[in-house]
Image (tube, rainbow, N blue to C red):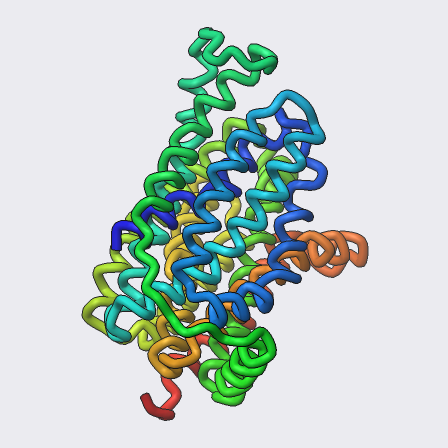
Length: 380
């Protein structure tokens, strides 16, 4: 369990990189590179999970994450890009392998709770990172004898916790011996498992709902600065308040989800969460003042906070033997986030609706999918 929570803490590294990307000179490619990894790597990583075991991949991913921290603190754009590529690769390994590792150690009825607790740790790390950067920036010490610019010292300081957690997690991973599996057999095993998951209407609906929820969440996050400037004439201070509200609400709601999923089947409350997210999207669409808009942000964050727990808990409970396939499918679905920006651009260009209209439409599409998952009579 310690390794799982350490892995989720390190999994927040891409969120942290987002804070530093402009200063590192890689803001133009950071999100694109991460979405590319999520599009092409999950299935091969799922095959490796079957062949080598999830624990081996978790250890490798943690070591790579530690190495990425040092590259990201380097003194040039090419080195930072290399760090970004390594961080993205390691993050996909973690996103696929950690849930699979959890299925081997955690009973099915507690899995959603444990993974949601991991997401709480990840969110906490992502929220703490901007403050960590601010503190590190106030330190004027030239820390290291390497040929790095003094301005990089603060970034190195802020990345040290990730490197330390990655090293601790790698040292904590226990790797049990397992029989070797040929590559061709591993591919066939994963594809058969994925086919079984997608052939189940409830599990397939949960995966599609996850993709829709992800696009909705990314579209909202991308649209915040433009929406506040257009509707309320607000600037950076208001944007900071909105993001603080968004993550400040998600944190306790995620913790509550970890508690709730210990006591109730994760899929049974998926429809309720989606309804709350839709209500939040409706308030965001109709709000005529910034305080009312913040109410919408709080509702939207509440509804979106535990989507991963709802979906992976549902699929893993119904298909406990197909954990690698389920994790690969969900991480592949993360690539759907790349659709959000073109979707927003198309809506603006065609004059169909503003960004908040796109979010509302996606929320309306999510609710029936979540209701089907929650209320289907198909067992279990």
